[in-house]
Image 1 (cartoon, rainbow, N blue to C red):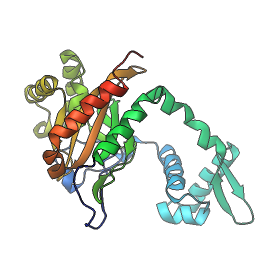
Image 2 (cartoon, rainbow, N blue to C red; image 1 turned 90 degrees about the vertical axis):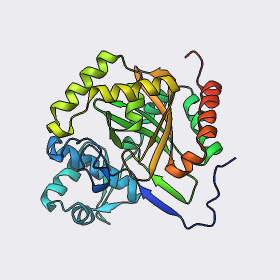
Image 3 (tube, one colour; image 1 turned 30 degrees about the vertical axis):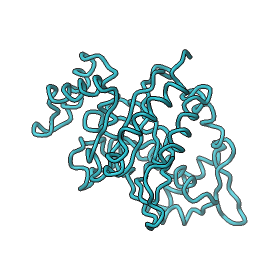
Length: 285
């Protein structure tokens, strides 16, 4: 059964993936902690991944001019980058159309990651189960240093929905999924992480460890997190830890949606998460 009937409403995608390691916090994210500025990323490395993500977005060959205009790169810099990627075997250049296209070398680079993270399709089966049961956006998250990172996202089936891209990050100590992931850590580890976070913060924005630990104790007691309006106004997530770790990484599964839909279906969603985890992944690896 899919919770909620939104079939008569026009489709509305609300992006939630603006908060990345390179972004400045938007007006709707004032509660979130600061992220690493663009200056912390080597320019050439940033551009290389921007090019790859642009190919993934447009899914057709692109020209030097297209790329240069889209990202406002200097033509000389864009040309040098594309030529280097051709020499390394990651792009193919067609001299007749003067366009570049990714090679299969790129397509095969991450083939192993899904199996390494999700094992024998158990987690993917759980994701499908939760998507079918709720119709909401289903995510898998893990800790990435001082951030919680979405590593897999199954889009919502509802016309009114929030949108996330895999790779999107949230501040570890200022987000629902982050609190959940921290709840799996020892208290002394949480203390060290908070100290690291606070080093980068202005005094007025520093995390109060006492308040954070109170949140974490509540999550540990109830076995899940229900975060409302924490990072994006109107958006929320109900999430639980997965009982398995992949290569030492703590994983969490979340159901993301507008807060009013989550509130209306909280008990059903928690039950589906609990039953689904027990059915699909609550077993020895």
